[in-house]
Length: 511
Image (tube, rainbow, N blue to C red):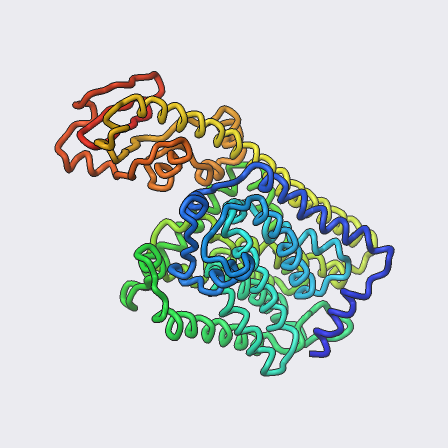
């Protein structure tokens, strides 16, 4: 406990000369978030809450997230679209996560708060999390809470600290479940780094106050107890919807190994594919490689090789408990562990400069090279955020054009106005905006998180903004009516799309 108090005192008792470091950290996070504030709104199911006013986080097992939203809106049970307030609220919460990471890895310069905040929340897979106008503050808060739990876990031996850390992990699960990986990843990376070192003294860079074995035991106990409380004690009281039941379901012991292997393979395949199809991805891969080499370079070859493999294994397993889920195709917004890993390796790699090289000349130049690499990563992530915001806005404007045009075409049919037609099927998807198409060439992963006009239920509901209230119908409904797509009356035929009518269903087909 005394160790934690000392860290907090060093954080709060800063000299005026360090004011620029605080401004740097705040500026980094604010600039990174600016494109989300200006360009991204009504992302995916945001429209459901903005239009219907329903919260529904409790039906996803996110009880505390539901309560926090109600408290923030003075007890209101109805969601109201207040963008960009959610994105603005994320800024101090992201900085809070950076502060907890700063304390966890015992950094000296406050510049690290900004760097760690960007690495944790600015990594490309977190852009989707920040896109949700309603959910983003909860997702960011849950991740920051897990970093705080990791800091408490490694900072003292008192039993009550273990209870506090476990309580925070459980709370985070009740806000947003995938954020759990931000707890165990930094703890395990610290444990791997400290393996073979003595407990913290004044002449080494081991931040732990107790042994590696004891730390892993504490981390495992906290993780297991928190998950047991969530899954066994609390889950039976949840009124989960069908989607949540399917996502949260786990397999029996017999099928568990094959499921875990399948999920690891899909996750690693995504990382490798995205990691080498853009300059930012290649630079991130280079940053990871160099950081791990620096971390393991101070050990004997055999121990360094083992640590190298263990650190890469942490990244491969960074989906954590989600690897045991039967649900396939988890979205990239669940890849929070990637950011937790990026946050964990930078400060540990930097600390090796204090003990690895005795020559001031070699130490100075290697430090400068690594400083350039980290600076380039931070700049690249900020640039990526601006590119995402611009591509999102350009695609949204094109989507709005198609929705308005299609609505105008459909409402010319009296059958729609008279209520004889009440369903819509959309086949294919609208074209990419030229700006978005060019952005996808540099950042291909963005293509999957930027929506087009397509046949998804959430996409059909967006037509209500233009006065067309039709129910979503899947394409399979056309087959059930034994009608061919082009067999009915076609009243609009354009080079980019065609509109047909089949009984009570409007069919929009993008060419």
